[in-house]
Image (cartoon, rainbow, N blue to C red):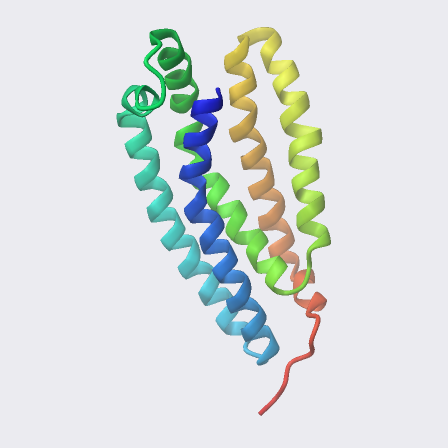
Length: 177
């Protein structure tokens, strides 16, 4: 799991980096009073991170054993880690889109709601989901709780984005030049 989790982290880095860049873009454009550019920037970032996420998912799905084998030669470790990667990696896109959405909120200065979405996704969905699913599916149920939590987080961030409330959290009011 530790090796597979490290591969996960590496696979998720592009989404995190895209999100950080988007935060700056959102802050600058909201500060300049150009809200229309925020939506365009978000969509462009979602497409870019989506392409990267799908590409990484395909690579991980095609070569899970080779990736695991690069870090450990134990056949059982490779088998278990590969099973994990086969379950989780098809859903890197969900994580990426969720992260991009929270980047918009953070760029607008709205950090509280993304924190709550993360807490709800982790504590009310992922952990109870892992517990419940493990009863019926064993360790694979625990692994399925990750994409389920990402999906829930994506839904929550999408709903919050649509409310537009994040636009009201701008820390510095727009400067009209």
